[in-house]
Amino acid sequence: MTADEKYMRVAIGEAQVAFDAGEIPVGAVVVLKNRIIGRGHNLTETLKDVTAHAEMIALTAAFNFLGAKYLPEATLYVTLEPCSMCAGALYWSKIGRIVFGAADAKHGYSAFYKQSPFHPKTKVEQGLLQEDCLALLQSFFQQLR
Amino acid sequence: MTADEKYMRVAIGEAQVAFDAGEIPVGAVVVLKNRIIGRGHNLTETLKDVTAHAEMIALTAAFNFLGAKYLPEATLYVTLEPCSMCAGALYWSKIGRIVFGAADAKHGYSAFYKQSPFHPKTKVEQGLLQEDCLALLQSFFQQLR
Image 1 (cartoon, each protein chain N blue to C red):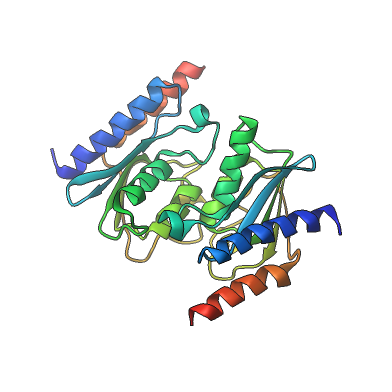
Image 2: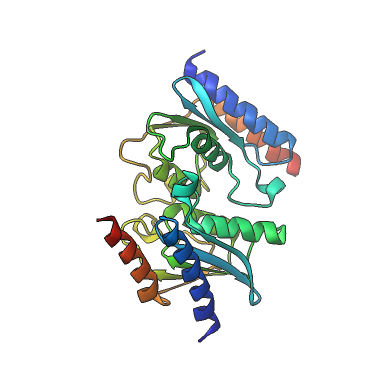
């Protein structure tokens, strides 16, 4: 297992926690120098707050851990393509790298932005463990029907 | 003074609190049926958290006050054009109306989005008391030089 796979598995674990709480299962972790410095899962229903996305919670946790508001050396792993809000937050964070699993054709940032919304130095990769990321989302939406 | 002006003056008051704390002076309030249900000012430096924009704080306060995650009957007043992150949050909130003061050519949402980022039912107005909103920002950036 690569380091990227390992951290995406942690993000999937966070998504599972969201799933178990009846939340749309999305999870995220922020990693700096092989250390997890922030993690989060979707809590919009629990908190009744649409800003409580996995990425926002993981970013704030990372800022708090470091006492710094920029993350140029860090990587965010997230199971689903960030929405436009989370993409905006990632822009401000100047995060070094973003790795996401499943694409989100409806609410993913790429449907909304004219061009890359991220800082020019931010690298973006997609598709890591996407089947596992998607499986959790699919079984969540299936059980709703 | 119209009701809109009154609430924008409260938002400017929030921006002044940010100014006094050494923060870029932006303030926001959320109003529902002539009652302020959330307010906030920029706290990115104080909290070392780039997600701590005035709008995000005011929205979360409003969600917490109501115990509800949608704000279709509410109006957000904010002194500066929302950035792409805050525009995304406002989209998710389904807020009824957004009134902002000064435009932000560099970081305002309109520079980034292909089309309106908001919910189709959200009304947007700009320019209310924009001179006052801008004056605070200008004196902040002047004192930095």
